[in-house]
Every structure is written in structure tokens, then in C-alpha cells.
Image (cartoon, rainbow, N blue to C red):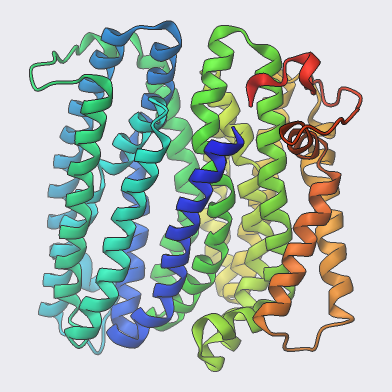
Amino acid sequence: MFRAIAGNFFTKAWTALLGILAVPFLPRFLGAEAFGIVSFVLIVQSAVNLLDFGLSNSITRQVALHRAAGERDGCIRTIRTLEAVYWAIGALICGALISGSQLWGISWLHPNALSPDSVRQSLFWASLAVTSLWPMTFYSGALMGLERYTAANLVSAGSLTLRQLGGILVAWFTGGDLRVFFIWQFIASLLPVLAAAALVWSASGVRIGSPIRWHLLREQKNLLSGMALSTGAMLVFTQLDKIVLSRLLPLSEFGLYSIAWTAAGIFYLFYSPVAAIGLPRFTRFAATGNRNALMRSYSLASQVVGLGVIPTAAVLAIYSRPILTFWLHDKAMANSTAPLLQVLAPFAAAGALAYIPAVFQWAHGWTAPTSITNAVASVVLAPCLYFAYRSGGTRVAILVWGILRIAQAVWQVAWTHRRLLQHQSLQWFWKSVGVPAAIGCGVCLLAQQWLSPEPGIVGLFAVWLIAVLACSLAAADVRETIALRFGFSVYSEPRLGFVTGQANGGGGE
């Protein structure tokens, strides 16, 4: 498991690095208003993912089940059928985005410096770019279910490299022409999708003549509807604040809010690689009845995510101003964004920590906790955001969002553990969240006594690395797995109901 996670991590690190590096250049080359439109298109792209209906996670789970049972024909039928459904949904999305962007795009965004005709043309190509990228989540899910992790990582990294680096170069050479920028985004999105489709067909045995079995949708309707509600509710809640504030904030202020969220998006680097490996592995171990490997993999995955997320959240919250200054190379922009990031980082981290328990329940075909908790939180969030912003501004709106985020995460994790993990929520919170949080925050607060008020990036990286290493010493499953890998002898009592050590089936790694 460590090898697969490491490969996925380095790919995600590369894509995250590209995303981080792109932010200072795009506002400079495109201009503040154009960057606000780019940020809005990214929100639309995230909102479009709501229409995934859980198919990408469903295909990962179903392909993993077919592989565990040795059902090659079943795997081919499932991929071919869900692929047809996905492309049909994509065609509907394309038509809706193009018509919607031309009808109400100007009235929603309120551009001042950009001409209405330029905005309409840009939104047309942006709609095509969003739609062309849409099938990538399906093919990535299929590759993960086939356990072709390297292929999935390379295609994903290649796609983002083309879009980010190419987009920067296009914006630079064209003098900030937003229309040409989105034309490039369309081309750079479509080509990797076609490559991913070819890889899935080659790995699974799907051919042009492979039959589409529509009855599979009826047979799997409970799982598909559950995954649709679960992932849809999760995406609604995580994107609703951006949608609401894109309407309330001026474009320039919304650009700053987007920068703060881009910085907080670094948490994706830590939980996404683990979750991508975890879903097919959890599914396979649950299907084959390998309880020891299942429990150990879940414990290890949770602690690995905690090791990355918690020290990073502490560093971002305490040292947000020097980090943003180094990143953006614009002190005024950093000073305006830092207060937002300070509030946002801890709450975004809470959501990242709750993702592995969500993946664990999906592997068991149970989706109620994420569906219900995110749906309830979403219903409450929209009016709360509106009144919070009107009464106290953006920081108060973020605080309200964060309180709901923590409540939703705690409820979801406790519910999942109560059914699947024998009422051991408190132990999980203590070992995967509580101890790493205490150690990570402690290291960062102590570092404040030694570092200057404006520390350099090398000093901040050293603080983060020390916090991660200190947390790893307290993460028993991580420590023991590393020891077993290198032939050390480590003794510990069984914890959290998860069997550890070689004698107890630790071979699930």
C-alpha cells in the first residue's frame, strides 16, 4: 500500500505544485477581472462534478469487485455500460453550459473592464473546456479499479500540466487574451481524456463491439443512487460557499477568496492519493472477507492522511502571511488574503480528515452518512452564508462555513464508525486526529518563539517537516509499518480493533 500511495502522492504533488505556481502568474497576465472569470469557471467545473452521480466512485468499486471475483466479462460489461451513460450525461452538460453561459453569464459576473462580447466568447470556449474534461473522472476511476495506478497518475498529471503550464504560456504570449486561453483549455482537456479512454479499453479488454447492458443500471440502481446522493451532497456542500460568495463579492475580492481556497487546496495533496488507493483496496478486502487487512489498511490510511493534513493546517494558519508573500510575490495581495486563509485552513483540514471514513463506507456499499450529513449541512449553509456575509463580511462567512463543516464531519465519522467499526469513534479521533493535532500545533507554536515574525520559506519548511516527523512517531500503525518494511522488530498491543504486526495479518499492505 505504501508504494502505491507514494506513487500517487508524487503525482498529486506535481499537479498541486503546478496549481500553486499558476496562481501568481494568471492574475498578472490575464488581469484581475479575467482571473475572476477563470476562478468562476473552476467553480462551474466543480459544480459539474455534481452530475457525476457517483459513477466514478461506483466504477472503481464495481471493477474492484469484478477483479476480486475473477469476472473479466462482468468487468467489461460494467465499464462499457457506465461509459455510455457518462458520455450521454456529458452531451447534456455541454448543451446546458453553452446555452446558460450565453444567456446569463454577463448578468451574473458583472464585468467592468472586459467587453460583453469578449466575455461571451470566452464563456463559450470555457463551456467546451469544462465538458471535455468531464469524462476524465470516469476513466480515472476505472483505472483505479483496475489497479493501474501509474497509468491513472500519469494521465492526470499530463492533463493538468498541459492545462496549467500551457495556459500560463498562452496568457503570456497573447497578452492576456481570455478567449484564446479557454480555447487552449479545451484542447488540453480533450486530448488526455482520449488517452485515458484508450488505456482503460486496453487494460480491461473493452472493444468497440463490446455490448452495452442497460439492465446493469437496474441491477445496481440502489448502489448508483446511493453514490450519486453521497458524492453529490458532498460536492454541493464543499462548493456552495464559493457559488454564493461569487454572487455577493466583487470579482476582485472573489479572486482573493479563490486564492485562499487554492492555498487550502493543498490538503487534497494528502488525502486524495490515499483515498484513490484506499477505495479499491478496501472494497477488495471487504469482498474477500480479509478483515485483518481491511482494518489495518483503514487505520494506516487514516493516520497517513493525518500526518500530512494536520501539520500543514497548523503551518498555514500560523504563518499564512509569510507563506502567501513568498508564493504570490505581492505583499499587498498577501496581506489581503492572509486573514481569509487563517480562518479557512483549520476548517478545510477537518473536511480532509473525514474523507477516508467516507471512502471506507463507500467500499461497503453504504452511503447514508455522507449523503445525509452533507445534504443537511448544505440546506443550512446557504442562508447562513448570506446573513453572515451581510453582517460581518467574508471572514465571518468562512467561520460559519467552518463550524458547519466540523459538525458535519464529526457526525459523519461517528455514524460510520458506529455501524462498521464497533463504536470506536473516540479511539479513531484520538489516534488519527487528536494526537497529531496536539503535536503538530505544539511544534508550530514553539517555533514561533525561535523564528522571526517574517520567517523565510526554508525555516517554514523545516518547521513543517519537524512537525510531520514528530507526529509520525506517535502514529503507531505508520511507525510499525515502516519498521516491518525495514526488518525492525516492533511490539504493540492491538489498537482500535485493527490487527497489527506480521503475525496478525499485516500483509494487507
